[in-house]
Length: 96
Image (cartoon, rainbow, N blue to C red; front, side, top):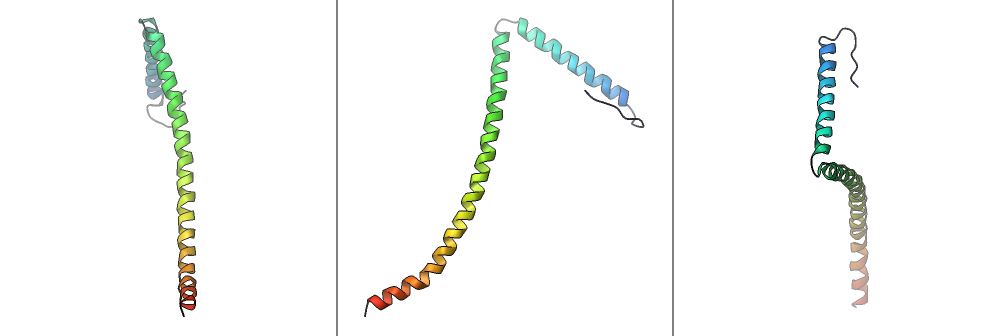
């Protein structure tokens, strides 16, 4: 858990607070399991955590795709700019 370093004021007090909070959290979980449907609620919370983790991983992948897409759009725009003068010259030659 939390460790304290020498020279920090209140280090022991902070550690005690964290230990108390951890103990209260465990106590709350035990009470929740004892309630009707408590086990199902905990399972649902764990499933939700897993789904949120999966979603965040997918969103990181989407950001990478957006970056690649922006780069490709710039390349296509540059290619179109290069092709425009050639396209107008070829149509002028074909007309006369």
